Length: 377
Image 1: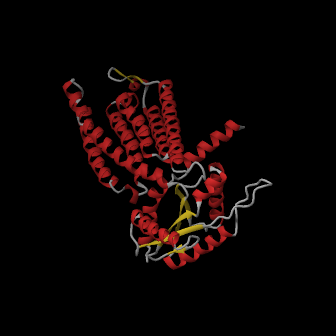
Image 2 (image 1 turned 60 degrees about the vertical axis):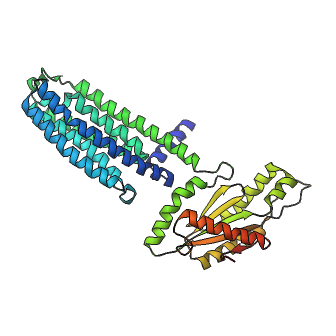
Image 3 (image 1 turned 45 degrees about the horizontal axis):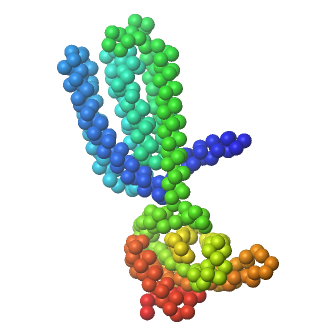
């Protein structure tokens, strides 16, 4: 049962939309794939030349040269679009489909000269494997499964077409050897195994990246997550003409709490604060732990409404003291101070907003703590 649940969890993760950190990694991966594709397609121009120098058929060389030119043109187009791949969510699927379909098209063109070449051209067939393996760089399991399934369907359809129209004599040639059903089934199995292996690699990458974006103590998103997520939130707010507010929170007297009850109990107090805040958030609000006793609340609200929300959260925290859970220990009163900054008036990027919120947090501390500040002195 545990094994089935593990497999189910892996499949669910692979099929789900990646988080912001993985999307950012996937965007840079798409650019890397585009550059690799351009190098590989440029090298394809050497294949028809090598075929001609080795005494190969002129028709095959012309097909190879024409196909290489076409894929090079598309490779340059994909590279141009990959520089802004986050704006084109369909791009990884389109380029993966292109890589697979281009391979099938070249095999079909070779088959127009010799039917056996459509299924026994090992060099071209290996491009299926490369197309599937390169999807790992995109950090999105959905693209891997899409490319693998498309390769299986297209190569399977090519097999069915060739075996349907070819005579036994046409399935044998001096250049490409004999085409057998057993060999083709083995190649289909290899494509399926390549897809499964690549999807497993992507899943492992997703788990590691997910762990890097989660705070180990509170299980909240951490600074890494915030720095990847905020640009998208700010961009969306700007496009819609909306405000986005960020509240920098500090647990009051945390050093004194640690000194009085110990660091282990202090960690429990911090987790208590995270739970109380998390329970008070709306669905479109996010709580992040920056480090130490500092937390951040991101709210899609203008500064006035954000202050009201944080005031409500501040009162909520003050009304929920931490219970150590022991008979002799009294509940520990927990309060917070916060500074709020809003986009666009306080800045249009994460660093500026955090800097302005930090200045206002210091004002709240200086004025006696347990308060929320939205303006500079």
